[in-house]
Image (cartoon, rainbow, N blue to C red):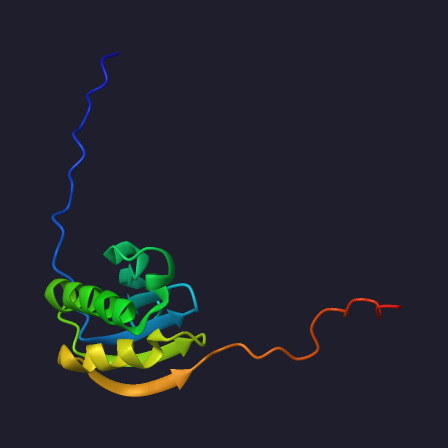
Length: 132
């Protein structure tokens, strides 16, 4: 009983076109992370200040966020034809405005800017009172 092996056929990857989507900006004091997603939230490209060569306290600067946003934005434009964005900003770092400004410089039309930073309500139980 000789079984014949059929070769598996790989489909050729087609260039996916995503003209509009979301840009998630996570701006902490220590780093800024930029993520381009399609409208459903599937990740297209991502970049961070640390990934762009900044180290230590320089990762949290506005310039580092600008460089990271430019790198991710250029990749999204070239690979997917990204042109319209809904920007979702989380965190309170220095890179918030710088990242949005650099997106506009790349001719990506920013339709909406939302702040999705979490706000604590209640939180954990505080420490016991200090007795002196």
